Length: 353
Image (cartoon, rainbow, N blue to C red; front, side, top):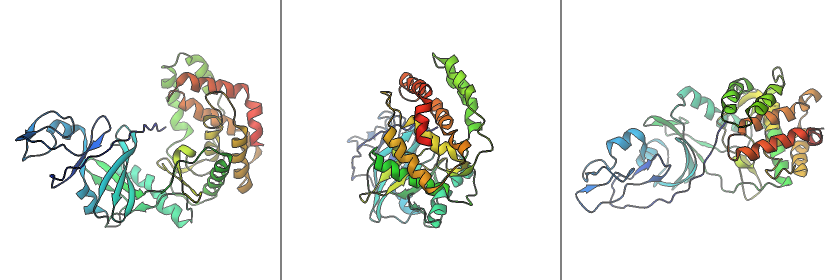
């Protein structure tokens, strides 16, 4: 699963640089090289390793370790002019989402993790055009390059550009959970998607053993993992795999747009439905937000139905996700939330009827 760390950093302006180069260094900061008043200058990434003022602005060591790109790269390949690089919005390792400002409007660009192959990237971005053709409006528009491609390789990483949605993170109100339930149902009703999701129960199960090794409650953790049912042969559709306010932007008119489509693909429907049950609707203070849960599931089931046997497995799908997320954030609170959910399974499951 993806763990996103927020990192906002202001960007200064150095009008003396004919070509503005931007660097994402190992600390996650994105900036332009600083001006030096002598005949040498510090590296714009590590602020060490003096280099000739007439030469490159980045030392060789940092070039090998960091992402270096310029506004000209974007202007050369995308139909944008007078570009400014904005703040970093999300960062997970070398996977970065950042603002991109231009005369043509505001956008965001995403730098894929270096481990991502070109074929995997094509799968990731396929959803943008496919869903627009299906009249699914709850996804950002992908900005094509000048030659009509959805992405470009800059340096050793793939980059793509999307529209910047004007709005804010949705508040966690029952009304917004109704909207998210309806959007999820609309997504699941779309057919003919050609790719299966690479996020599956089978892909995640082997990781539980490694996670358990780091936990003080390893035996109890593995016991719950082993209690999970067989999820095979259940209904499938196009799923997002990570639906919630954390992966959404709400426009001023109330419309919610989902973001982070990296793992989208055909998969088990109840994974999308199970994810918020424990991870969102049970707080770290061990309160079950019943009204919000009812809003989400009632809205979803008003638009589409599932066999009773599959509804009964939504709690287990939620447990599956909660077990994945145990090591992220406050491990002890995450574990206590799971134990609370298991103790109160019958009550919590009432919202799924």
